[in-house]
Length: 173
Image (cartoon, rainbow, N blue to C red; front, side, top):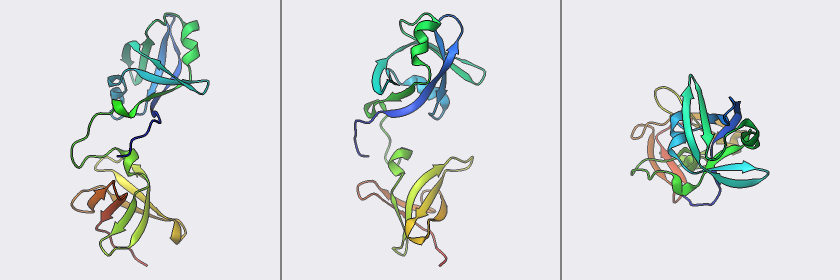
């Protein structure tokens, strides 16, 4: 995993909620509740990242609400509406051997068992059974290949140092 100082977007502040300065939150983490395991947050306001801590949070149905420390009314809370929520890379949990963050897999070169470059990972689709890598080959008119993320079956090796993923996948010409 390469280290950088770019904040990692994990959610967004929505609108105001109630009269005590609460705000609606959209979480981009999985599971969604994990957004509250990170503190402090960085909020992007006027092109500048500001560190902020939350005092309380709660779930109301499918909605998450947060109350920032020192914010007690809608007028003060309004400055945060529509701000991106981010964390630093240092706040991420350490992964075990063989585990990867999706962001580290995007743009890896995908090479099959015959040494053929299939393309690069452009996105990862979350499905019920297993995630699916979307591979795009720019040299072949943006040919799209979908490969299930099943280690030991289709995925043979992931090497972040060489930025490659080796797969057991046959391509029809």
